[in-house]
Each structure stands twice: as structure tokens, then as C-alpha cells.
Image: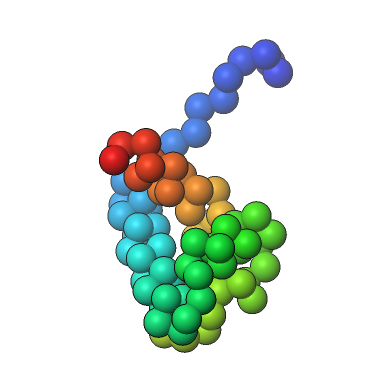
Length: 81
């Protein structure tokens, strides 16, 4: 069974929520003077929420999603645009 490809699906509603959260966190990081891309990459790679500011509740927001959901939304947006 290890030779078969597993299929991974995320519901559309969660993807829409992921996009809203990513944009909110991005804007909060930018407002505080951080490089949003660097900070979000740090969070996604490490899982350490201290990469995300608590400004505008961004740290709480980003922790509502699993990191794989964030990656999926980012990759989807990158490849489709």
C-alpha cells in the first residue's frame, strides 16, 4: 500500500477562511514593520507562533489553521495566478 499515491482534499470553505487569515496576518505584520513573507515562512517552517505579531490578533488567527492548510492556500494561489 505504500506505493500508492494518497489523495489530499481540503474543503472549499476552509480555503476561503485560510485566505482571509493569511491576508489579515500579512497586513498586521506589515503594519508593525516586519517583513511579512519572512515571518510567515518562519512560522510555517517551525510552527513557532512567536514569528507572528499579536497585533490585531494575528497570532491567534494564524493558529486557527494547520500549517498544511496555509501551505495549500499559498501554493494554490501561486500556481493559479
